[in-house]
Image (tube, rainbow, N blue to C red; front, side, top):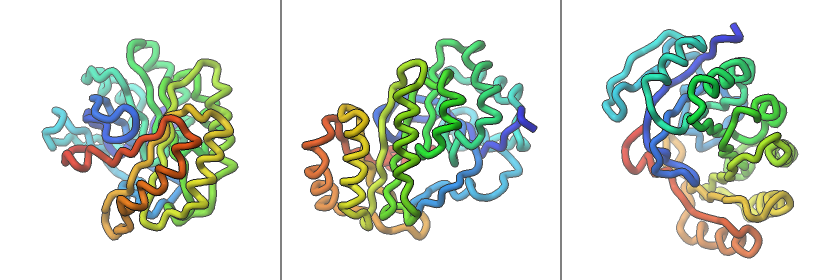
Amino acid sequence: MENDASIIEIFSSYQGEGTHVGERQLFIRFQDCELSCKFCDTPLTFVPNKFCRLESPAFSKKYQHLPNPISQATLNKIIGDFNDETIVLTGGEPLQKVYFLREWLPQVKEHYPQRKIMVETAGVHFGEFIELAEWIDIVSMDIKLPSSTGMHPWWREHEAFLKAVQRAPSKKETYIKIVISGETEEKDILKATQLIASMDATLPVILQPASLYGRFRSIPTIDQIAHWEDMIKPTLKNLRIIPQIHKQMGIL
């Protein structure tokens, strides 16, 4: 049903990635993703989740298990129990739930106008973003390097997504996150740099070293990270290196 969506988990925590790292936010993790990155740390994305896990209170590791799919009314009630300023739509790939979000996000803005909506996305579903842009405040966009992900390139989709963000009816706070691994190739770093610079060389760009997870062990060395930083800095003016801080803290 269009007013229901399968959700993996809902929790309040400190943002562990990107330019808002360290901020307390409410995370809604939607199921499903068409991509399959080598370093993916959310395996529940790819299997049916009979229940949605709700951590309450925050950081307690105590969970309620709500039957999936979750209705808009149920989700509205849940977020009403939290007071985090920013609601993060994550996944999986939240933009694959456009059928749900285009009905639900206007309700959030109506009932909680002071709250901001952030979307964490792989940056390939540009048509879906256009449908939802009116209700999104912050865009956390990935650029998927083929040598890091093990997938085919998404350059055309990334370019179309960035253009969609630039042409949105209202200006969006936007940053780009690039996961780097021990297998990342220079040509991909250069391609991503050129793509971003062609749109806006002042966009915040985060190089995020991949984390150990499951069988994934290809983390970059500090020499690799420093070399790629030196390659990018002359072109992109707002570059930072930020690992996944929440994993270091042992929190969701």
